[in-house]
Image 1 (cartoon, rainbow, N blue to C red):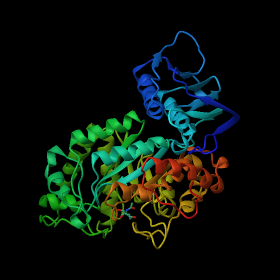
Image 2: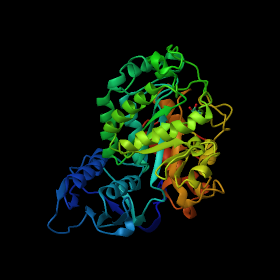
Image 3: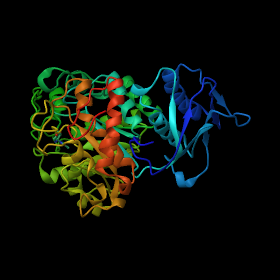
Image 4: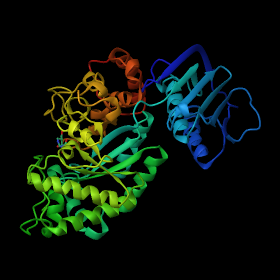
Amino acid sequence: MNHLIPLPASLLPTQLEFQLGPDTQILVAPATPETLRVSEFLAAALRRATDYALPIVPDPPAHARDQIFLTLHDDSTLGAEGYELNLTPDGVFLRAQTPAGLFYGIQTLLQLGAPLSAQEPKTWRAATGSIRDVPRFAWRGAMLDVARHFFSVQDIKRYIDWLAAYKLNRLHLHLSDDQGWRIEIKTWDKLATIGGSGSVGGKKSGYYTQDEYRELVAYAAERFIVIVPEIDTPGHTNAALAAYPELNCDGVARELYTGIEVGFSSLCLDKEITYQFLEDVIRELAALTPGEFIHIGGDEAHATDKTAYTQFIARVETIVEKYGKRMVGWEEIGQTKISARAIAQLWRGEYGAQAIQQGAQVILSPGKHAYLDMQYNEQSPLGLHWAGYVEAQDAYAWDPATFSADIGESNILGVEAALWSETLLTFDDITFMAFPRLTAIAEIAWSPQAARNWESYRQRVAAHGARWQALGLHFYRSPQIDWE
Ligand code: IFG
């Protein structure tokens, strides 16, 4: 029980052992399509580890020994995502108020099984004890920039699998920028066909068709992860400006851009066609996105007139709300007039207070802790370092509630690890930058601050390294951690 990440809210080991047997069954009550689907995640993982049948038994008649019981139970203290997990030598009892809570309890149970590397074939054992667990923050996010370099549906699904294993529940896809537009928009088809044909260095272009995006949304939703699509505006728009001359103030299409400068592009805010463009994009994106959030960017609009920017953000929020969604934006939107439903994402820590003064909530992604594209150190082969070097301890040892004097716990919706892809080409590049820092952010997002400390995390994550190694996950062997 001593290597769980994220650390549960409460944990009481009882120093015995539960061992899966060939006759073990997974009993589910009530057996609904959701609880049966969630149970399948557990059954599939345990079958892989043992080759046991592990049948799922819906609404079992009575209790029996050596079984795993999954039950839904009205318990408001567990909330929408909490669970209780009790392991005894005679059986495992997992209960939650929602299927999401069962899903998170299953992630914990799977971590309790002895690490794959230490596993004799055909056994699955777990230390006994009782866990009662609820998340600290509702927004536990990871952002992936698929605009600088494009990543396949398969790569995104593999990343989603890892987010789910660490109880993250938001995947923010940065779908457009100066170098690339990555989502098919039917009313403006050149956004993807032309805007999607570029990338940093011209090496990895492409885009998601609307069906592929729906596939990602569904795959994430099965793992209780909400996809948050970002169309960055009014800056970071060169790919759209390359696709449509009429979106440019001078009516001339821009060249595709393959560098990594920022802040040079802007939509033409005094042209009505710009707002038709935005309405069409947001309408189509909202129809594809069951989640309640649409991210409209708003960062580094250095090429946009300040007054025009302020009017622009207000007008975009009206459009987002018209299609039933809540506007998320980088913290610069805090300088403008936003509604209390808006969400400001901190990255430099300059405008959070102004957003909160308007009743908005914030997500914390501070560059010096949560930007996973920051180099670990001067020797790191990948990443940038405008926010400094970010080693594992820098990602872990901070508290969102004391990060800024103007921002208290109640203002914070959650935290999000941002991974920009200027210097990333492959899935291994993504995971090298993400692990072991994404798991640090996942623990900050889930676990009680009082229970967290770097010494404990560095020991626990060492055990995860053994499992990542066994599963072929490419990660950074930080010298701050004594990897197993
Ligand atoms: N800032 C830019 C990103 C990206 C990043 C790389 C934000 C909100 C630097 N904007 O972070 O587009 O270039 O670290």
